[in-house]
Length: 310
Image 1 (tube, rainbow, N blue to C red):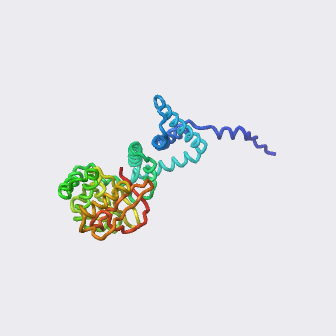
Image 2: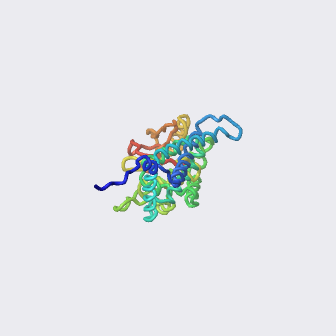
Image 3: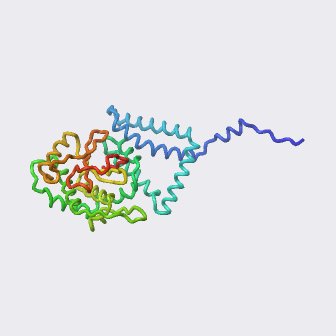
């Protein structure tokens, strides 16, 4: 009778549970990447105890890192598998020229940089997670630091509303409305090719002021941001349009007066302003190409995603 070697199950189980040093390295790097944005959120929202050498913040960072590290180590098998799959996806994206290692690095750096200077950094993460078509391409196309874009915006502020006096607190918004007036007065709607979306950069759209809704939104957002305004893009049913941050409800009252009595008197006569109020109570006004005045009617009310440019 053939005898099979006896298997030492406890010893085998112990061997299977041995952690690879690479596991710890990968988990440590991942824990650090997750800890940084979470720490920024806690730093901005928790009361500063004003301890010497910012020890309270150091302890918070260490605590968050340790908690995330031990959680990921507990789930390390599935985490390592997910990381491997994600790296393969990024490698494939880099090879075919789609979303790859460079893009995710730029997105992460941009997110952390923006969060560190924002009083509500958690909103940045929410905006990153919301669905938005062609997000990376659109962000790259909003060339607000391009000299052509800024020079165009400056030209618009010299052409429209330059003589308005007495509203110094709303000078930037007035100048952004001048950009709106110039773009919407010249915009020619042209469809994308049938075989897919064509994302034009802001500087490209300056050539002929033509394109579809995302091209208009990109140019508007870039020009508004280039002169100090805060724009965001709204994704709704089959449509993308730009909005501008007005401020609080008190600011809305002032801007409402400006639009209807000073800046867009004829265009807005007898009409109402359309805007959204976000979870922070901030007012965002519609700047769609379909309107002749800021706050014109929405094409669609439902918001499927928002891309805020801080």
